[in-house]
Length: 173
Image (cartoon, rainbow, N blue to C red):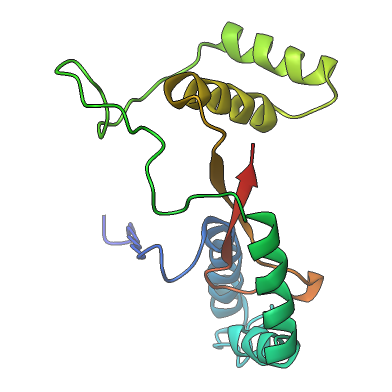
């Protein structure tokens, strides 16, 4: 069919984060509709531009502020041993160290875990994080820090900005 088209898009994760993919699709559809309805290419696409974010970030991260944040995290992580493995035990022949393990929960199990979170007024994420922490402690007999990502969209005006806004946060357990 001559009127049937397929658009395939592929982006490297460094171009933008998952949040940005929804923004991109909305903007792409908006531009497409403008072309179809008005037969014109819009000069400006709705949403904040990444250069605006970069300007804001540069203005809000003075050397003094960065030093303050660095000192804060150094104090928080004083007992952490970054760069060292928590699993110092010799590798056994049947060990899974260094291998990936995938696990998929059934709906019933997921529901039970959510209920546990609800009873303790917390999220499924926190329940799973606590489970991982307990497992790692059982393996190593040491408290560990577990890293997680969060969005770096620190201001509402950047919620419609395309870009990679991930930050890592160490969670002390």
